Length: 71
Image (cartoon, rainbow, N blue to C red):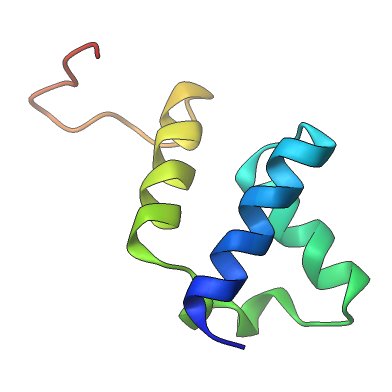
Protein backbone atom coordinates (compact mmCIF):
# COMPACT_ATOMS: atom_id res chain seq x y z
CA UNK A 1 0.00 0.00 0.00
CA UNK A 2 1.17 3.51 -0.76
CA UNK A 3 1.13 6.48 1.61
CA UNK A 4 -1.53 8.28 -0.42
CA UNK A 5 -3.90 5.28 -0.31
CA UNK A 6 -3.35 4.85 3.42
CA UNK A 7 -4.05 8.52 4.11
CA UNK A 8 -7.26 8.43 2.06
CA UNK A 9 -8.48 5.37 3.98
CA UNK A 10 -7.73 7.10 7.29
CA UNK A 11 -9.55 10.25 6.15
CA UNK A 12 -12.57 8.11 5.24
CA UNK A 13 -12.54 6.42 8.65
CA UNK A 14 -12.34 9.77 10.46
CA UNK A 15 -15.44 11.01 8.63
CA UNK A 16 -17.33 7.72 8.72
CA UNK A 17 -16.69 6.81 12.38
CA UNK A 18 -16.40 10.40 13.67
CA UNK A 19 -13.17 9.63 15.52
CA UNK A 20 -9.77 11.28 15.80
CA UNK A 21 -6.99 10.55 13.33
CA UNK A 22 -5.06 8.49 15.87
CA UNK A 23 -8.15 6.45 16.69
CA UNK A 24 -8.76 5.90 12.97
CA UNK A 25 -5.20 4.66 12.47
CA UNK A 26 -5.49 2.27 15.40
CA UNK A 27 -8.87 1.05 14.18
CA UNK A 28 -7.48 0.46 10.69
CA UNK A 29 -4.52 -1.49 12.09
CA UNK A 30 -6.77 -3.66 14.25
CA UNK A 31 -9.15 -4.40 11.37
CA UNK A 32 -6.28 -5.35 9.03
CA UNK A 33 -4.11 -7.18 11.58
CA UNK A 34 -1.27 -4.67 11.27
CA UNK A 35 1.16 -3.64 13.97
CA UNK A 36 0.75 0.07 14.68
CA UNK A 37 4.53 0.41 14.70
CA UNK A 38 4.75 -0.56 11.04
CA UNK A 39 2.47 2.10 9.57
CA UNK A 40 4.64 5.08 10.47
CA UNK A 41 6.19 5.14 7.02
CA UNK A 42 2.72 5.27 5.44
CA UNK A 43 1.67 8.47 7.22
CA UNK A 44 1.91 11.46 4.90
CA UNK A 45 3.06 14.93 5.91
CA UNK A 46 -0.49 16.33 5.83
CA UNK A 47 -1.77 13.46 7.99
CA UNK A 48 1.06 14.07 10.49
CA UNK A 49 0.10 17.74 10.66
CA UNK A 50 -3.55 16.86 11.36
CA UNK A 51 -2.51 14.45 14.10
CA UNK A 52 -0.27 17.13 15.60
CA UNK A 53 -3.09 19.69 15.61
CA UNK A 54 -5.43 17.22 17.31
CA UNK A 55 -2.79 16.41 19.91
CA UNK A 56 -2.17 20.09 20.65
CA UNK A 57 -5.92 20.72 20.92
CA UNK A 58 -6.17 17.91 23.47
CA UNK A 59 -3.03 19.23 25.20
CA UNK A 60 -1.14 16.00 24.55
CA UNK A 61 1.68 18.03 22.95
CA UNK A 62 3.06 21.27 24.27
CA UNK A 63 2.77 24.36 22.12
CA UNK A 64 5.86 25.75 20.41
CA UNK A 65 7.53 28.56 22.36
CA UNK A 66 6.17 31.21 20.00
CA UNK A 67 2.62 29.94 20.43
CA UNK A 68 0.11 29.34 17.69
CA UNK A 69 -1.94 32.00 15.98
CA UNK A 70 -5.66 31.26 15.76
CA UNK A 71 -6.91 30.40 12.31
